[in-house]
Length: 421
Image 1 (tube, rainbow, N blue to C red):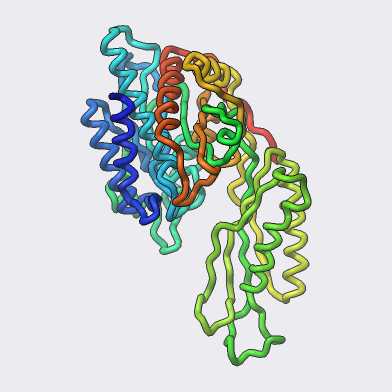
Image 2: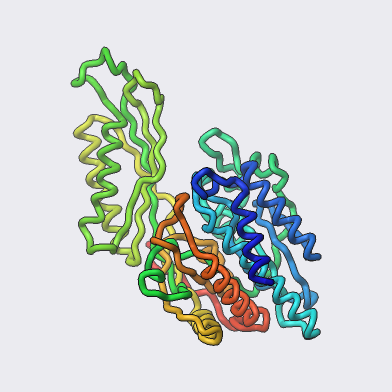
């Protein structure tokens, strides 16, 4: 019955903001995001738990068994990418809700209060599709990003985070709970677990991430009347920069570096005007910080040559640099034992993507778990994980959370960042 109830809730959430090809579109602080937030709030209240919303829109469902004790946090995020998948983030929140309900029932039956309380969390704007940077809510909670500055971040239409959250009724005023530890379960978003036939991934570290904010400034002119020799086309130059970002990976070993340009805006974006300005964001990631730094240096040098050749100006700024974070060894050993006790195969694995657990691991010992992704695709409507793997993941998260509320990792500390310049 527990598994059926979980699946019913998960597949219901997938109908909110559903797209025609089985994906979802629930970007942060949109009407669709508000609907999932309303559902989460109603579920928490129906369970008899306390609901809190903090000043950056993070939502917490609190189960207090031991008055005054800190909380173990479990959860993820309900927002999505544009035309995103229905599993990314939402699975972790719904799994946490049902893991918490199971543990609440166990404690109600057994009568012994654990060392720590438990809270289920829905973090704000993990995806960063509408408001940059990503992992915003948990980073503010962890003190990595200033709340007021993040509230002033605007989307491409000029709407700020503050305005958007206030508009959907989720600009909260509460403080988040004191945290003892954190656990999150997520789809892998890669194909390692599927390829190796492994059920659970135990995340031991995150990749080094570096973004470049690139502004290409040319000159606006007529697409028909201006001679080709007289043009300073920002879009042509930007197109070559996009290829540079893609091709720089070839300077390193296979799979050692991934790179992409995921966002581009064009001005004036008229069919009969040569572009005067293009803004784009390049994303570089590797398990080796020196590789990212070498790629960055090469791109900056090549972009400088390009700018002079095209007689235009290109401004490049470092943006959203995230060092390698290693998860506590004690948490990995704990999760490995839980998996073994459940009869599940597991292996250690790196996360190339960013997650709320990476931010939380800076302030509280954290455990990050993966379940398999079919074909290793994510951030698209084709993203898929089986019901069976999701149900197994709920069992796994429940087992980890059971250990955490009992005091596991209480003596552990977050490990320092690696790769910081």
